[in-house]
Amino acid sequence: MDQRTHLTPAGESGARLRELIEAARTVVPFTGAGISTECGIPDFRSPGGIWTKYQPIQFEDFLASQEMRDESWRRRLAMDAQFSTAQPGRGHLALAGLHRAGKVPAVITQNIDNLHQASGIPDAAVVELHGNTTYATCLDCARRYELGWVRERFAASARSPDCEKCGGYIKTATISFGQAMPEGPMRRAEQLTLSCDLFLAIGSSLVVWPAAGFPLMAKRNGARLVILNRDATEFDDIADLVIHEDIGSVLAPFVAH
Ligand SMILES: [Zn+2]
Image: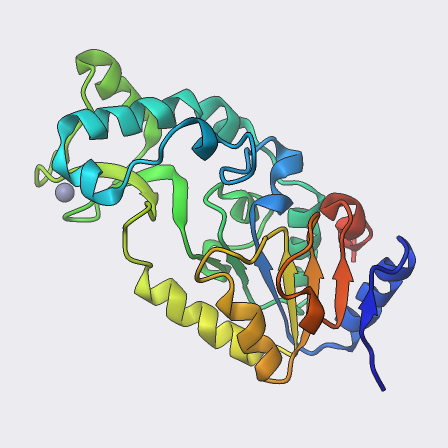
């Protein structure tokens, strides 16, 4: 029987999503910017997003010049009001509920906003493919620095500070353009993808590598695939359920699970 359901009306698709989640043994969500837009976090790559206003700073340029490090921190600190005040949305809370219920072992995310952790999912159960922008680390010794500390130093000297322990460069704990993907999280994301019988792609356009690989990997491994995204994706054709609706509204009924 072909279970595929495309663009069913609201309500119907929500009911189908519930059936798929209830029938699944292990659900692995993969989240992108779309789950955080209702929390006021800008979708960096969308039209009007920040990368259409500023050229992203490549990792090699960050390493190469103090001016680029200063510019990188100036931009990050200017956006801090958005990141530091954002609260988890309905999508985050729904996934946290499914985690507590034992359905979701961990969440794979492209987001750097820490909102899955803020929704109550333990750090160890959030696999961050692009790192985390809510704190910083030394690129050489990995010592952690809080953004408040960086802000104070930056305000005092108008220069991005270096590590107090080893003199290395301090950068938000994110994966920059031109920086290698983190091996541990990539490996874990792959294991999770292969362990699930239901893969939920939520709020990701599934274009940027490595995001594109996971839904396909899950599907080839025999899992069901649900795509919940505002816009169409390249993988809609192979999904068992595609929902192009507001993410928060679709997932709200799962908040209390
Ligand atoms: Zn250091």
